[in-house]
Length: 329
Image (cartoon, rainbow, N blue to C red; front, side, top):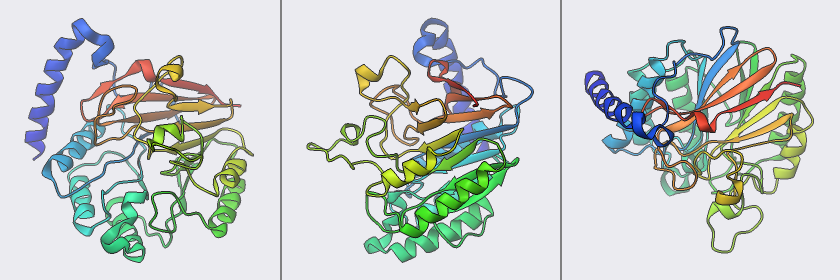
């Protein structure tokens, strides 16, 4: 399998490298090194979302393309984060397909998994079973024992807070207990004086072009977002400096400043201290914004700034037009 994927990716890279000579703006940059832009990087991690794994071999191969790309980075990634909808229906066979792909590669030193709505649709919407699968495969894939769909962890001293849904709905269900837990975790993390990374499948209501980008014919304000706890969650997150809120769910491709009037959204929204980052769908070809699949971001954290770099991990190409840089405050 490893040799086959290496051969296919080599062929794709060769073809697209030639195309880049003439159409670089369309095909991205294959020449930039796969290591941090500066040597003093303190944390370097990748984030993808909406893998939507089924039992199909083609989907498993698409994930493997990306995992191999990450494994071959010149500077090993400190973490890889999957921000929900890892599976398409939360079924054991789908989780096994994900686990088998990860078993063949070491894409990063740490793996962090977040739950999405598709991950809760096990069987006849059996949420209890979906939780069991999420716990079991967190341990199998990430080596992490958890007892709730929301949890926190640290990588290189930086706090990652992972949120989850407590029911099997398309929109997120967030209990008062989870909100209180988030407030406590944010306060605790803020004591380190470092950026805080919050991972959730669902964006804040009416961010990133929502509810229109959710696609309903007659969208309601909460469509595509957290739901009725959105304002509470947003208030907590915005109470602290240097918070990066990383989500997926709405399947929008990369955009950059100046394109919000064209596509109706931006991939990254920032007030200078709170930064909301919405990830493109990994498995499918994005139809809004940058047309590509296998895409996500890498984050490079420095003493005074965070660099966010757009990449197709499946094709091994940087899309430098969609990079972002934020000074820490």
